[in-house]
Amino acid sequence: MRKFDTKIQYLQYRAMTEVSRAAWNNTLQEEILDIPRRIVPGNIPTMRCCVYKERAILAERVKLAMGGDKSNPNVIEVIKIACDECPASGYEVTDSCRGCLAHRCQEVCKKDAITFDSKQKAQIDKTKCIDCGLCAKVCPYNAIQNHTRPCENACSTVKAISMDESMAADIDGDKCIACGACIYQCPFGAIMSKSYLLEAIDIIKSSQNNTKYRVYAIVAPAIASQFKYAKLGQVISGIKALGFHTVVEAALGADMVSASEAKELIEKGILTSSCCPAFVDYVHKNFPKLVDYVSHNLSPMATIAKYIKENDPTAKNIFIGPCTAKKVEFQKPEVAPYIDCVLTFEELQALFDSKDLDIVNMEEDLLDNASYFGRIFARSGGLSDAIVQGVKEIGDADFVAEPVPCNGIAECRRALLMLSRNALKGNLIEGMACEGGCVGGAGILTRGDKNKADVDKHSKIAQEKTITESVSQLP
Image (cartoon, rainbow, N blue to C red):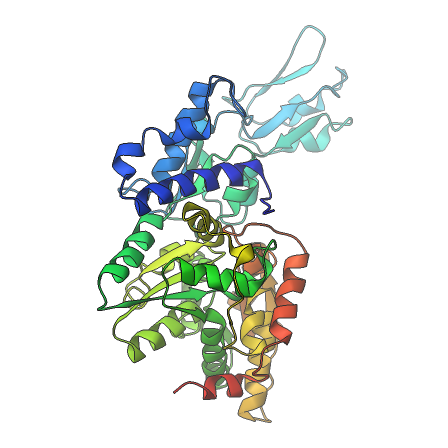
């Protein structure tokens, strides 16, 4: 019925589901050691060399489902025991080497890292090689290839991943922007984000036992592209069945941001967006001189959460979306007063199943409180369209918004470089760290081109057709 892109996602989901089920039942401490054995029963391994290693890795997944290493401030963690199958990155001599006599590879090597065996086949001494690539360039047979680990390749722009002494992946927290690209690209599931499931469950359970506050679910517009086995209205019913008092679209916050950011763009003349926390973090860490260009607006998530708490002092806000970087954002001083917890769509699925909720058989509830433009924030180019519309609705005929949509962190870097050189062909950088936008985030259930189409379809049925109409409904 439901679909996960990979078996790795399924294993992570199983761990999160079992942890959540035990947390609802107040039996987590008694069951924690049995969870890996329940997921992999018997003595036959399903994905690893032996059942003991498989359970050991699952035990680490359970720990991450419970919040991970509290001493590590990064929300992305490496399961070291699971990171032992990828070959080391770097240049290697392949079977295409013909053992030629020219030895051009050796001649250009400045570190004497290349020698030859008895058959004149080249050998690279990894202790001397500096991965300059000169040998690969001069080989007439293209016999020397550069192999990059999937996680390093996913992080090639940010460069936060290297290898430690045991050749396991190591994440530099000073560089990492928590985009989660490495999580999906790791073929062995050795990288995972910390979960705040226990905090979310505690908030919900406490609200049910204490009528002094109510729990709001703030859902990202990308939800329209997920949970494809059910109707969106049934997903909303499922969220309420978990114990949430109200479900609110973060897209309404996007409308509020669009209206404010359009004014800010007109005032400043040039701007970068602030909706993607990974992009904003990237600017701070790699282009500190450009920080003043970042919009002063909070993200749509924080903006609508602030509005909710200002109008309902009893509110507790839990954001549900596709983004691992939101797990960092909600802990920042400027956001922490408004958002109490963050969950991904994968974690929401785990919550549904931990309560045995069959949402397919539920009645459909309504989710209709944002404009078309607020909802399309979920995909690349959506924010740009929204700001153009915002400027249009302001009615300033003398100003023209010229957005530069950036689809992925590599495009963001290029745009920021152009801005730093005063050569940007436009006046608004739409920074989206994930390719495709939020619909390509690390915390989604399924990915693909259809996600964008699903978001657009959901956006077109919005009752409010303009940003002004959407914001004006706010009391």
